[in-house]
Image (tube, rainbow, N blue to C red; front, side):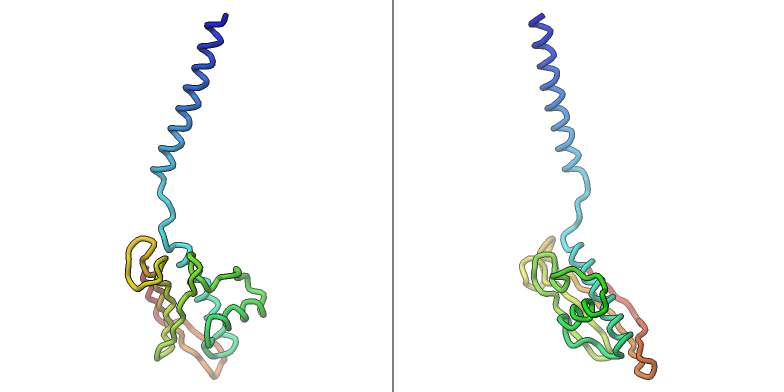
Length: 145
């Protein structure tokens, strides 16, 4: 009888080790979310808010703080820290001629260039502002990751 109990315990331990090994193998094989994906998602939300801001006020926001205030005023869902990248660094907002906008994260290392989690994430887009109607229409869209 003791021999049967011992074999049962050995089988349980073997099964437990096998399950843990299988789980660890699956974890290593599953594709993970690439670095910068959360940042890109935040930038797309910021872009949406910029477009909504232009629709309402027929002008580009001065900075991303104005974008965040607009979200609060209009009750548009926007996470606290939504103007920062996934590493907590501020997203860079640049306005160019002809209403081109660049949103940029310099990655984890906060330096231009890099690979993996240090790679820059850049979203560029253009908005046409119709001052007569007080709204905007999106023109051309270029996104680099």
